[in-house]
Length: 316
Length: 277
View 1 (spheres, rainbow over the protein chains, first blue to last red):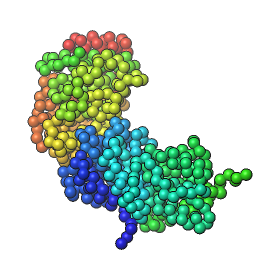
View 2: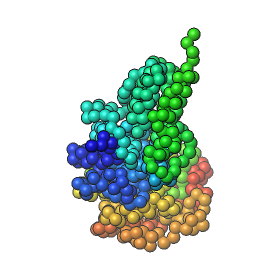
View 3: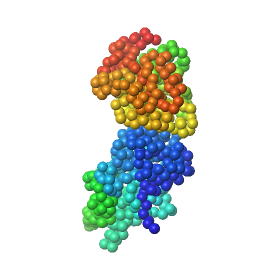
């Protein structure tokens, strides 16, 4: 029995469950339904499933129209196409009028793997969070993905949810209580706090465990909601531990690291080190090798925590 | 006061009122799009004062027909039609484009009742119209969706993604009207990027098509009725129009795409429009 689940798999199952509960839920895809897992929903509810073909701009517009007609549309494709190709459609036709459209984009980050840099979105969080009114959620595992999708039945407004291709470790069980906009403190620390999202959360936990052996107490926060950011959780962590490390499978520009930097620099300046993709495109390879290559590992986080701790002002 | 008119002559007079509102509000605003608002005045009048089922006193009435102004820069024609239908006081037209006004430079559905969806970025409205028409089909609703596009707008690739989808889903509850005035900001469409054979283009995407004179009220109404009667496919009405229609100063002049009438021009425009009243 593997305790690994791809967040896209969890999305497919949760969407079906939500669809069974709520007849207003409809799903759309742009010819990637087998990969994004919206096909699971489409099989049971063919009359509520629209495959618009390879046309991401139209995907977003049709989703907007369905929302105006009273539906709760979930629009899915790969993250790079959803947020890049159709960015302005999301801005103009979904966010500007404030429509209740859920964009669940899969194959985000570099763990897409072999497809290579053209398909590895390292900018999607950044692109989505800059649009006024957009909620941005990056679930850490399959359980959190399912909880986030189910929460969408009651959560109004445009929302972007980022899921991945690769199977990743489960860190939660069914008792976990997901709330939009609420950070989940997994571990408290006094020397530094690692604020992570997505598949970097299990890496952060691993790093914190190993750091303890080196005599460093590192806290871990799962920041599943990038926007609206739980600023209080960030400020508390900065105050209590005095150093912050962020970890994301995304560019260090514009994503979680930037979001956290914006808050601590304004409200509680402490040393910060950002773990993420360093302003470069991805490349083909196996997901694990790529994580290593781009420094998205527990080891990289450990190193970053030590750097951050070293930057802390010495107590007099 | 709300206008309610049913006969063709009455509609022509209403279109004159709409045109006078357009030139007046643009002159007051000091900026905005004259040519494309005037070219669409007859089409929009036919929709709001004859064809569409809607309730100005209850803008969210669910059974209403929906109108999407894909060419959002022609906002003044929509605002005049909404005001004259009774969605908001006609006096508010004077606030066009001003700070704090509900009458934004391009339609904002969050601010103004009667605006179905915010538009302004060209090429997106037809996709939204498809989504609305799909939802009506799913719920077996009678309401129809009308989308008004510019001809220059057809240069946007997304329009053709939507055109493909509308035919694929058999959206016979969707009517697209193309305001074919032949001009865009930088010049004649034929010179900037040729969009000719519009009917053929839509026909090849699987639409029924009707070509009309977009300033002939009887032809407009007849086309809208025929579009409703067509079953199984969406209909595109290609309406040949004159940009700036209603005032000789603006007609067919590309420079009035985004220029409002000056005080002197307003005087001439109001006089000429009244002559057709």
